[in-house]
Amino acid sequence: MDIIIFLVMGLIVGAVARFLIPGTDSMSWLATMLLGIVGSFVGGFLANLFTGGGFELTTVGFIGSVLGAIVALLLYRAATNSRLA
Image 1 (cartoon, rainbow, N blue to C red):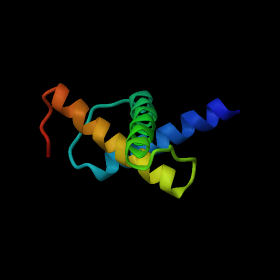
Image 2: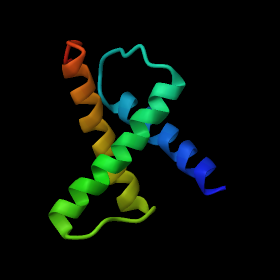
Image 3: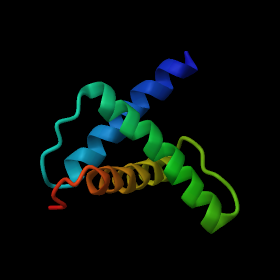
Image 4: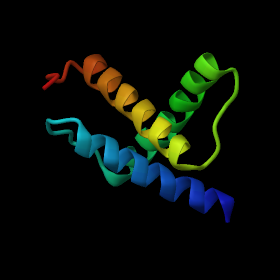
């Protein structure tokens, strides 16, 4: 059951990050889910750097995951030479 929650949260985080960053991305819902999962890891890594500890599945963890997904999306766009809007 935890894996399903993890995947659904990844999809939600990826969708929010894609909504917040202007521009079009031709990503499938599976790629959006992967973006959210990567964003959660990036957000956790950044939280660990700044606070010395990770974060849990709370509001702060969700915001950190979205910020991590935004960073991952911008890096994806830069790597694929997409236009940074």
